Image 1 (spheres, rainbow, N blue to C red):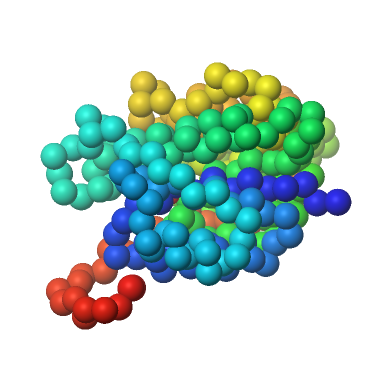
Image 2 (image 1 turned 120 degrees about the vertical axis):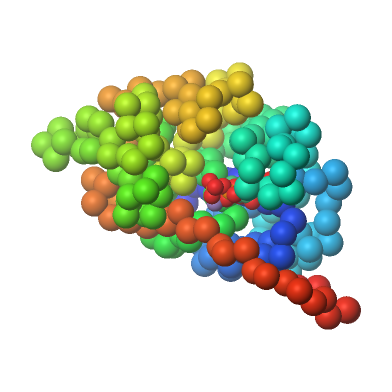
Length: 246
Ligand code: UDP
Ligand code: MN
């Protein structure tokens, strides 16, 4: 029996939001036993997100959690925010801890940003996780891929290839790991925080749960790329056609 995979997706309004969420929801439709947790960075739930979720017919939980205003620069560009997804991922972790029961509910938790690209094979890999599974992520950190380095004889992670602070305790992108629900439910104080230095969210979060030696390298001992840190170009919209939800 496949474990439930809880996919946590922070999302915020911009012209490509519906396109991104459509793409990700239709990827998830190809997988068994998905529970999609979508958290809007907004004051209240939007029709766009509500409609994508209901159209998908996925088992889903729709939450809101707004990024603190002190975290935003005056800049109008949302990319200029220092931390992205902190509040939203924490809201999802709280939901899991409030609604699921350690020992009874079983599964795996994955942080699934709305703009990345996912091979459905990744979810077969996640089904193997005992505590924390890791794998390469394509097109990130200024490299063609970042990856844990795996000792082929012991099958253990010995270090990381990363374009960004490779000496972090866990030099792994948000898309490059998933954690068993048991661990998420048992270590209740493990959260993301604005206090964590820029680029240290993943490493500090993983440090609550595991050690480098314990990591479970997946995707053929980290030789396969099943997820890409793609980023969608911001479209230039100079006219609005009324009456269309785009
Ligand atoms: N996000 C959000 N609010 C924001 C910016 C981003 O909720 O103001 C979400 C976004 O939809 C994505 C995740 O946080 O699911 C990571 O953001 P982004 O993809 O912009 O980060 P990057 O690709 O630069 O790591
Ligand atoms: Mn992204």
